[in-house]
Image (cartoon, rainbow, N blue to C red; front, side):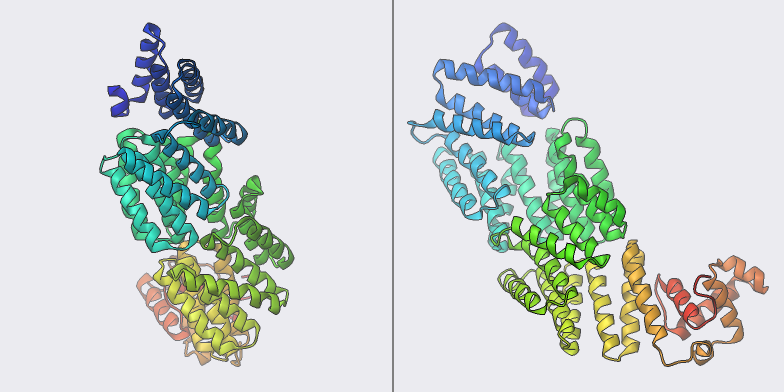
Length: 550
C-alpha cells in the first residue's frame, strides 16, 4: 500500500502481483487494477478490476462490486468504449439497489453527472447530481466525494453562464485537492481538469496560470502523466488566445509525446487545438487537414467554417455554423457564442441582414447574461459588423472601438487586431484616411509579431487600397511626402528586398547613414513599429517607386 500512497505505480503493480500469488483476494485484485491504471497499463487494469468485481459478487459484497463497476465504467469511457461503459453503469445501479445510502452511490452520482455535463451539456442534470454527491460526501465524511462534487457543480455553473459562482466552487474544490486533504486520485484529476477547462472556456488567464502551476506540481508528485498531458492541451488554448503561439505549440507537442504511446485516444485533443493554431497563423491547408481528421467535432466545424469564410465561401461557412449550433445547445452560452458569431458573418456576406439581426439578438442576450470581456468583445464586434452592413458607419466605428478595447482587456491580441482591421475599413468608408491608416498599421504590426500570415496579408491589402484610393498622384507621392531623392533611392532598395548592408554598399553610404535615412523615411511616410518595413514596401509600390512584383 505504501507504493500506492507514494505514487510509485510500477512498484505497486509488482508488489500486488506478488501478493496475489500468496492469496488472490478481491481487495488485492482491486489495488492491482488501481496501480496498473496509473502506471498506464490498461490491459492489466481491466483484467484485475474484472477479477476483483467477480470476487466481490461471489462473496456478496455489493459495495465492493459497485465500486469496481464504477471504476470499469470510467475506464471504458476514457478508452472510447461508451456502450461497454453504459453496461457497467447499469451493473453499478443493480449492485446498489436495495442498499441504504453508501459512498459508492456518491461516486455513481459523480460519474453520471460528468457524463451529463461533458457528453450531453445538460447543466441542470449535472448540477442536481453534483448536489446529491456533495450531500453524500458530507454524510459519510468523504472529502474526495465532496471535492469532486463541488468541482462538477462549479463547472456546470460556469458552462451555464454563472461564472462567478462556478469559479468560487472550483477554487474551493481545487484547494482541497492541492492541500492534500483529498486522497482519491480520480477525484483529484477530475477536479484539476474541470478547473483548467473552466479557465479555458472563460479565457481567465490569471486564474489558469496560478492553478496550472499547482496542477503541474500535483502531477509531478503523483506521476500523473495523463492528467499532465490533458491539462497541457487545455492550457495551450489559453496561451494561444494570449498570442503566445510558440509556447502553445510547445505545450501541445509535449502533451502529444506524453500520451501517444499509452493513451492514443487522447491525441485528438492535441490535434484539434493545433489545427486552430494553424488557422490563426493563416496556414489554412494544414489546418483543414487536421480539422478533417475530426470532422464531426464542434471545434472542427467552427474552424472549417471560419476558413471557408476567409476564402469567400459564405454558403459553406453558414452551413457549418448551423451544424455547430445544432451540436452546442443554448444551455452552453460560452461555447455557443462562437458559432453565432460565425453565422452572423456568413449571413452578412450573403446579404441576409434579417437573419443576421436575429443572430445578433441572441449574441447580445448572451453578453448581457455573461458579461465577461471576451464575450462583450465578441458581441461588440458582431454589432459593429451588422451596423456596417446596415450602413450605420459611425455606430459601427464605436462598436469596433469597443471590441478592440474589450479584446485588449481580455489579453487577446489576435482578436484585437482583427477588430482593429474592421475598424480601419470603417474609418476609410467614413473618409478618415489618416486614422484608417494608423489602425491598419496597428493591425499589421500585431499580425506580423504574432506570425499570422493571413491577417498580415489582409492588413497589407487594406493599406495598399488606402494608398491607391488616395487623391495624391502616385508618381509624385514621394515628393509630396517630402522625401529627398536620396531617401527615395533608399526606399526603392528597401522595397526591392535589399538588406541595409547591401543598400549601404550600392549607394556608397555607411550603415549608420542608411539607418538614419530609414528612420527619417518612416517618419515622413507615417509608418512605425515592427512591421514598418513591410508597410514601407507597400507605400513604395503604390507610389510607383518599384513595380508591384519587384
